Image 1 (cartoon, one colour):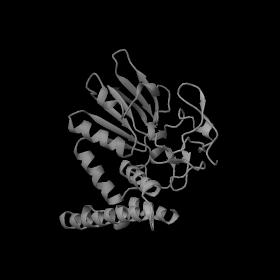
Image 2 (tube, rainbow, N blue to C red):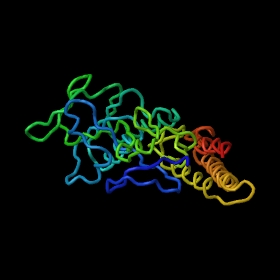
Image 3 (cartoon, rainbow, N blue to C red):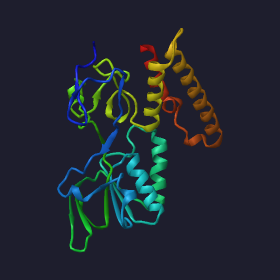
Image 4 (cartoon, rainbow, N blue to C red):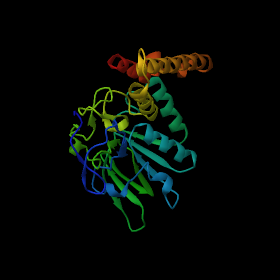
Length: 271
């Protein structure tokens, strides 16, 4: 039996693993702000559960979560400053990024490029002062940290199953397959090659299900997965053509638009 011998269940008892494939899809959690006083910062998970309005807000980060939060907070009328380590939206089409930057600035968002937080301190009035690499920024009601996410795998007992993990906690995998034959992984918790985006994880999960349960016959799940991928590709091409007619200057190149399905397509060779 190539499956691991046993694992500890939620009652703390040793038990044999289920014979069916196990899918690890724990996702990721926001990373805390790594500086003195970092515990004063909230995350994007917290922003919608605040008991009071966020008020004057400092956002730390230059990714899409940071900029999405900065954009809607500015749209609601709050004063927003964003600290960015180097560049906005690393890895995204630069023409589109420039338009996003201009849009944020036109909405009143203050972008501080190349500025890092060094410490946070809350005063007697409840306002937060942020010491940065270029001096102090004062008077913030809320500091929101959006500097990335860490895989949420620590409490899953994967070590007991013998599943290999990378030093950063991500599950080691190739084409969703871990080193344990009946354990698979998708999404942000996996050390695979696709983008850390929800639609990509959904697509990977659908294709994995097709490969595992796609039925008998010539091609089996691979054939079904190939048909599904072809439909997605055709839909993306139609969308690209429509976008080119509406706003050609805003559209990324075909390679960028089709990147996620193309990565999944490569995996079909290994079914």
